Every structure is written in C-alpha cells, then in structure tokens.
Length: 195
Image (cartoon, rainbow, N blue to C red; front, side):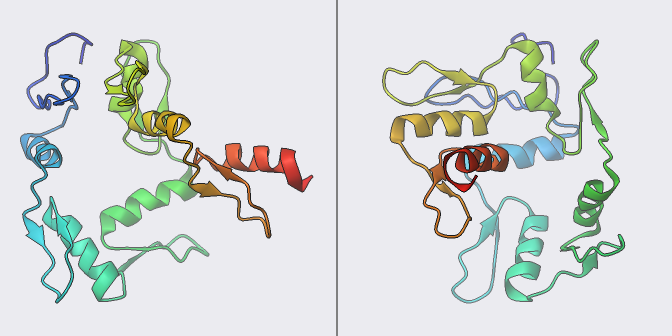
C-alpha cells in the first residue's frame, strides 16, 4: 500500500459510517478479504448447535475451535516443546504458539530501510507508522485525537471515561489501570505500594 487513496486488489473498501474513513486492510487472497468484510457487516453464518449455546462465527474454523474448547473440554493438538503443556484446536495454532519458544519473528516490514520484525502478523498496523495513517478516531464529543491502532484508541478513550479495568494481582492491592500492558501496570503499582 502506498498511503494514497488507492486500494490493492484484495484490500477492504469498507467505509466507516462515523468517519467515512476506509478500512483499507490488505489480504493475500480474495477469500480472506471476504471473511474480513463479514466483520464489518456483522454476518456470522456459522453457529453452534449445542442446546442453549448462542455462539456464532464468521468462519467455520472458529466454530470448530469453539466446539473443541467449550463443549468437548479438550484440544487435540499439543506443543512438543520440552516442558510445554500448551494445547490448541489446530496444528496451525500450535505452530503459531511455538514462536514463543523459538523467538522466531517471521513477519518483516518491507518498507525501505525498516528492519521491524514480529512474531505475529501485525504488518498492516505497523505500516501505518510509515504512512502516518491514523484511521481510528476518538468518538468522544470535542476530542479530535486519532490513532494508528485500535488498542491505542481504546486506551485513550479510557482517559475520558475514567475506566480502569486492569487490576494488580498483588495480594490486598487495589491499584487499577486503564492500560493492559503488564509492565506499565506493575511498574506504577510497585512505585506506589510494593517497594
């Protein structure tokens, strides 16, 4: 993506009803793009058939994972790393999990001169640093803040609401934070009470 108004062949052209901004997330193939567009439309064609379960999903593979986790009580694929007990609903999940052990960072930014690499596929979000794109706008009346990533927007919006959903797990500690980042939470908490 070049940062302009053009979208690649497998790029989401959904326009946000509030801001009018295009999603512009890019995909390797048409099937992935079509599945992504269901997130915008709210379409969830796959549903759980267990009595009183209301789970619905965009993709069949998500439904299968739900069934294995919620109703069978087991995952059938396990990590073979020594001492690891991780189990997942598919070989793919276990393969992605193994990156924790190997330290591998298979996803690389192709922006000229950028050496950024990641263990998870967040390249589209990362590229917004280069393009300056900030598609996520604060919905608080009078606030014009915009962000390149949705989690940064959520953290910002909590400054308006005062919400602090993340609590310290230290015994008898009442410290709470608006940010989920453990290092931020614990460094502030330690600074205040536990040193």
